Length: 449
Figure 1 (cartoon, rainbow, N blue to C red):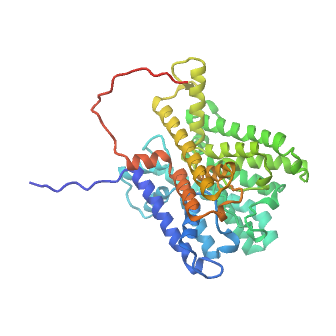
Figure 2: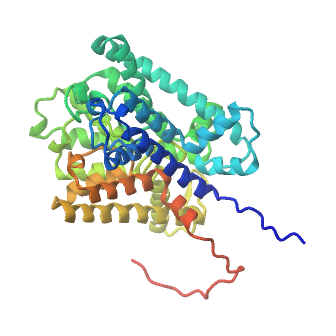
Figure 3: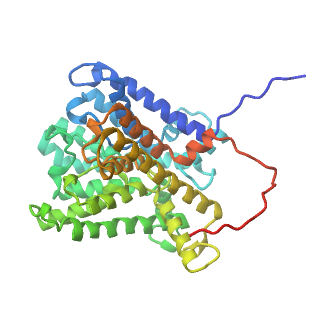
């Protein structure tokens, strides 16, 4: 009698979380090497780990200036981590298997489905090819646009490298930049009114942040909005609202403050729109954020927690999560039984997941801020900004990250990892499913509100 037990297969969630962990570890080891730093010195494990996590999780928070501390090799490692982290480790692995001619099995297809939040397994291999080709094409076009600014300013070779680096970083919603050659941790503040830089960065962020499934839907149905899936409609409408409304707020209530009197009208318009786009998903910056009012900082925090859309290069709570919660609240206000959107009913599972994700992100953001505020004796609002930036994988900072203690940095590392991999993915990978055989506890009402 054969008593050999079948080999246990890892779940999709476990593969996703451990693949990111492996990538972070490999990146950490490479960044520690003397060849990765300009001074050819060993980088501490803590600094390399923080940088590798930030790059792999496409966040953008840094403790060492990318341009002045890391060598060309170190910058290459960082941009590779951003590229793989943005498109997803699983996506890249499947793409390599496809290129080598290996057959993609059902389990690999299911893992890929979970990794990119696809609606179904069917056509997943074809979609992988679409993602890889589409991503590289968009990044190339972005680099071409950047080259019109960077080549005249930095020369041919350096300008090309800067164009490629920022093209990948912007599309992957990472927020890493090489502008430290002008001033440490300066980001894009020298390009506040530059149309090419502003438009290119914003377009790359938006395209990368709306999700791969939305791309496919848009290409398939073009401008026929009524034929889009409900998810595509929700992503597009919510994303547009989250760009326009905050941009109006920043222009009329933030950049009208005396602190910004030195800016021209055009610069204020560009800064408002850029701030609205980059705050949700990427860490690029064209203004000094320390000049923002507390209300402005709070709006930034809300946008950072929201993040991009499912199956995209962006992290955060996701636009669809916010939309589902808003539609559910609206149905309660109207005393309707089932929440609906665009003529379609929203499932109970989606509502439960949205509420759970919202609670998890808010709890982790606040808890992390409390820990950092207590350890570092810093104002709570500033700490909330940093933790929201980390868990939303945004990368914006009010300047406190490089000076934090190792414990506080570990908090940010954990939040960045959580924000990129996804809270439910981590829970599903670590908690065993409980099946009660269909039995349920008796129902009893409880009053809320």
